[in-house]
Length: 151
Image (tube, rainbow, N blue to C red; front, side):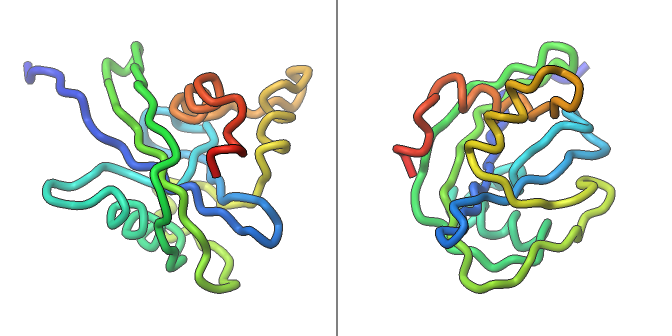
């Protein structure tokens, strides 16, 4: 059995300043399947955080974005899956008006735009329509309830 390792995940927080919304998607086919996520993935050896966020966003959504800054990092332990990640949240801005496309349908069901207020409303719903969020996003909002001030 292989020794477990801590991996580095990069989440691209793709922000549209005109609407003050970000791109979210529904995970599919991996740990956290069915939960809401940002575009992102694993940091590759020798790759910068910004390059990873831009690459993963392009691969997953077809959007060309510009990485601007590191917003935050979370320590994410997936007990059931026996996985441990450090997730880096990178603020990215749109470079055009193109809409995201599902380019990896085995990994994501759909992409949609939501604000932080929308996310909080979904997280605190009465349970009837409450959406589940990927653990790193839940940890991000627990660690930074004032996330808007970091942007």
